[in-house]
Length: 205
Image (cartoon, helix red, strand yellow):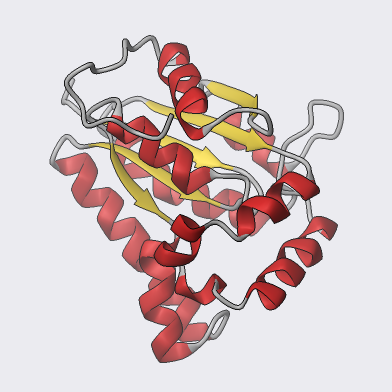
């Protein structure tokens, strides 16, 4: 089997996917590919949700993941998954395929926190620096609230199309409302059966 591994880090907006992903990478040899790596440059050209934006956002993500799998990279990919949408489930299957087709491990960690916690995190300076489109906090807060009407987390008592994708994958649900990014990262790496890399650059506490 080739080298390489894919860790999908999912959850609702502002739950801390990027900061937790950074902390995981600081403690291991994973590399971070967060969802706004592709969103921000496309927003400036096409605008969010337009047909060119949707096509290229999907294509860019798929190509990065293809090359990461081919090069044996251990990759953390973060994104928001509308778990009741068949189209989102199909997109996740496409994104995982380069790793799965090579027989490489794919795991899913699902972060969860209440709305109040996420609104507090939404104003974080690291988040805004990495995601300039979130710098209008009034708009960004309203967007987080608006998306509460959609299901962004799985629920064993309420099956969704996401469950069909996740059924055969290692899947950890982690409530991180009371955890620092570093604490969440430590739990994730322990769940993956990996000791923290003491030689890695220090991450958030």
